[in-house]
Image (tube, rainbow, N blue to C red):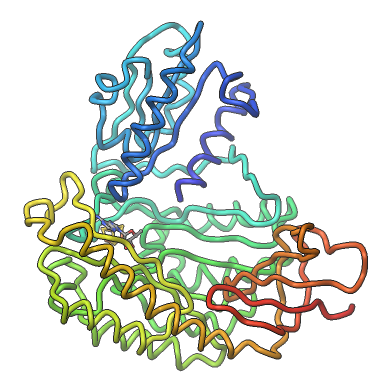
Length: 426
Ligand code: 5AD
Ligand code: SF4
């Protein structure tokens, strides 16, 4: 979502007549888009801002955008006085006007949003960096208030874009040659069409039915709003990719309650059973937090057994990181960092073993792969399956298939994190 925000900012600025340069040193204005989801991301920001200090020069200006900008606000001017603009994501619409003020010499410009904002950032000026695969934001913000999460405070209230606007953008993208579209939202499946025309599943079907589209993805789904019709529509519409990212965060019902996730282990597993009952094999992935305040060894083990029960194809594991403004900040961050690292490793090891065994199911299968890059050193083509797995494959002919093209591949080898094969002729 952050990467896509940057594409929108770049598109907006290019429309205003700004030019992108390849090297920071050549830029008159540096806009730095930031993330504050975990402490590490935030530390990186201040480290990077320190480096910008060295780049200071005649007329060079600095702007900080995104969640750290929103969270730290004017404190950024104190820590980095050479920064002259600080803006949260719901204020990007005002960037052209803020930049006029910046160019007129104003020193400290802020665009900070309160949680009440109704603004979405639909813009026709999006500078998509990949000409084949592109994002569309359909929901922004979040009203779920998980105890550990900063997003409701940095991205504001949940708001959805009208289905007609989403579909119009998707059609324009397909006309421009995009074949893969990924719908985005912090809780993409909490989508509520402001024009009340379509449910989320209906919107998926509508985007997937645009003539010329090959693949539709959506991320991230929240278990609370995961309805059965999402599985039904994946079964019914072949262009919808067979992959669902459904973060569980913990396998312990007690920890889930402390996290304010508003579901139990059993309730989550019921949604997983719907996905497993689909006619197509749908790949599942998840996010996990280890070391949430008070998490016991037995509760960690519950998460490990959940991994074994679900058999995810990929899991993103994070060490709990206390975030400003969140309810969990009031709880003692009781688990030392080394212990969090150990817990993380326990889950990663268990998950690696699950994937080592389960990826073998692809051996001998044929699947369609979208080409993403060429690995000339290894004479391989790198692509992605509908299930979102990295596929490395060889081709018989000397000319490699073009980036963005689709190729049928037979899988000959599997690894814990990727699969490999050879292109089929024709
Ligand atoms: N500490 C650790 N991980 C977090 N996430 C969100 N907030 C925190 C936090 N405070 C993780 C969740 C979420 C993913 C995007 O980041 O797992 O799904
Ligand atoms: Fe954060 Fe929870 Fe909202 Fe996801 S659902 S963005 S984890 S508050």
